[in-house]
Length: 406
Ligand code: SAH
Ligand code: TYD
Ligand code: ZN
Image 1 (cartoon, protein in one colour):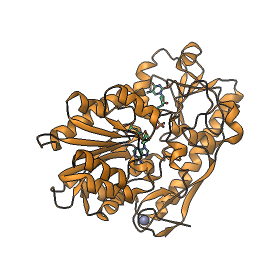
Image 2 (tube, helix red, strand yellow):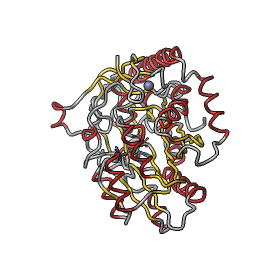
Image 3 (cartoon, protein in one colour):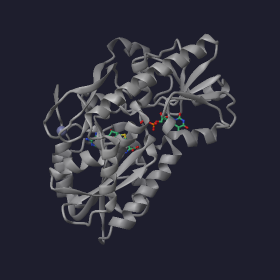
Image 4 (spheres, protein in one colour):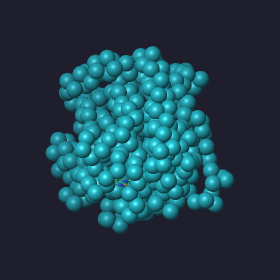
């Protein structure tokens, strides 16, 4: 039993993923013995429809000067954030000298566009190493966890904001009411909040349970987002599905009454109801599908291994931490994981301690099978890997093997 972080109603978890480590906590051998684990359980609050973790590590354990996720490792994501920034500029930045704030600006993947256009901007990013990369590109950033207090400091120094942007961050923050109050306080009269995160509707459809890891405390839907921000006198004015991170949703919100509400909002809410986002039984079904996905993946990997095949992981994603620990897959089945991020290379994966190697190791040494952990970047990766003659393994929307021909 737990209390909902949004509405305080009591609810039960519908699934446990067992003991899980810090998803981005890639580590050296000397740190194995002190590794932190927590029991990762997820529940659906039937009062406000927010799907959420019941327990989460402390924020400083996840976001610090050793944070391993650098946004700019994907060229597709660079294009995505440029289009996001352009869309906001063209639709909502109508004032003479607009000011925008981004929460969780990481290495500056989105803000670099506003910087290039000469638009006043500020990134709020607590992980010092990634923030440093942004600052070195000339992007205005502060190393802080955004909350109500930081919002007041920003208003005192820079005035109100025309847009508050954030991607793949809102779903990370359990003190969500402090964030909402901070945003409400920061936005000018016509100011808008635009944020995007992996979408509960997609997780439900694809049983893509690897979106669930320590950092993601919330799995949003239009139903739950609308409800959450109503509590702060803000209105959901538009929703725009995105293909990023395996299926995300962009939510646009404003002060209540400031804009007309798009028809997209009621349409998506109807769709969510037909999917069963508000139906507790659907979460029990989801649990069964997740368990089947786990059992199928273990069986496939064991089968291939017994045939003497070599299997390597592609992309040491945070998502892979959930899969590996939930399925208890270690070096007995996967030789190593290749990844382009320097801070991950030479380290071991959280919990299961599979070595992470440079991308060149994959190129030099093509395995028989590559398990595509970065499945959300499938197009970008398959385009790049035309020379790979082995087979790919994926677990979404179900466990299967495919070659380049399909
Ligand atoms: N927006 C980027 C980065 C997402 S990763 C992208 O979509 O690629 C999540 C980021 O949120 C991390 O860089 C983390 O340091 C940051 N973060 C976590 N809590 C935060 C908070 N309270 N305020 C601002 N940033 C936060
Ligand atoms: P991503 O799927 O964006 O993140 P998450 O950690 O949120 O699950 O992470 C992609 C990871 O895959 C990142 O560590 C970089 C790596 N990667 C490659 O190794 N090669 C590639 O071509 C791409 C696109 C990513
Ligand atoms: Zn609730």
